[in-house]
Structure formats: structure tokens, C-alpha cells
Amino acid sequence: MAHYIHGFIAHLEPLCEAAAVCEGMVVAPLALGFGFLPITEDLAGPDGPWAFENLRRLTVGLVDWAAEQSRTFPLAYIETNYFGVGNQAAVVWRDGAVVFVPELCESKWVDENFLSPPYLDKAINRSLRLLGVNRGAVVDEFDAVGLGQHRFDEGWVAEAARHT
Image 1 (spheres, rainbow, N blue to C red):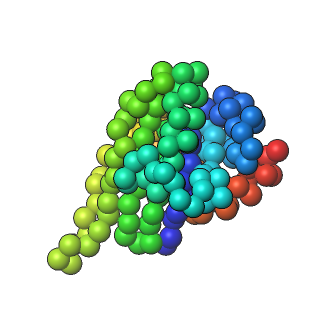
Image 2: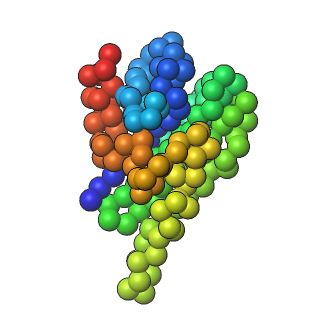
């Protein structure tokens, strides 16, 4: 199944406050007191400039915004690009600096063998742990906060609209 999301994750309240002063930014609540700020193509812009090679919607302007916000609260940018096989990536900021270097984790078929990092070692799970997500008895941090609830950014935008 397809899963294509792009956006910032942080504790809900400070993320909502930061998004409120930026035109076009909305935040959908996640489980465990976190929020997801989807970065749509319209919000990112069509032509970059892109800040990191492996992150398709993270512009230089959004990186500057994230670094500034992280002086107040830690946040992560995550994205998924799956259609059966694919990849996910994440980067985390704290105190104005990157503390989790952008990392791309791929799942793919090689010589009839499916290769994928273990769930807990994937970039998004590792980034969520840095934000303080405790998965408890759930399979991983991704599921603990509910990132599987919507498979596309548009679903997260609609979810945010239901909560405003």
C-alpha cells in the first residue's frame, strides 16, 4: 500500500503556536500529545531550493524555520515514500541545531530477497525517540503516535481542519 507523507512532528502545543504565525501551516493532533504539520507541495513550493539531498520537500526556508523553532522545542521533519517498497527519512533539530543527521532508510527487493531495516532502527522511529516518544506495548514509535492514520499529506491537512 502507498504511504506518502511529509512534515514536522513535535509536541502539539508549541507546534501549533509556531504554525499559527505562518500562512498555510496547519497542525493535526497525533497520539501521546504530539502533532503533525504536513508540508504539502503548495507549502514547500515546486522548485526548492532543497536543503538535503534525500528530503524532497524540505526547503532551505523550512530548515531555517525548524532551526529557529527548535530553540524553544525539539522537532523532527519526516517523510515517507512507499508503494510496497520505498523509503523513509527524518532529521531532528534541538537548540537551533541538527541533532539527528538526515537519514534515508530503504526497503527494497534484491535478488528476490526483501531487504528492510528492522522497524525500531528506521529513521522515523529513531527520530521520534529523540522527541521523547515512548512506544509502550505498540510495535514502534510510528504507530504509537498514529502516523499510519493517513497515508497522504492531504489526509493530514483535512485532519488538521477538523481540529481547528
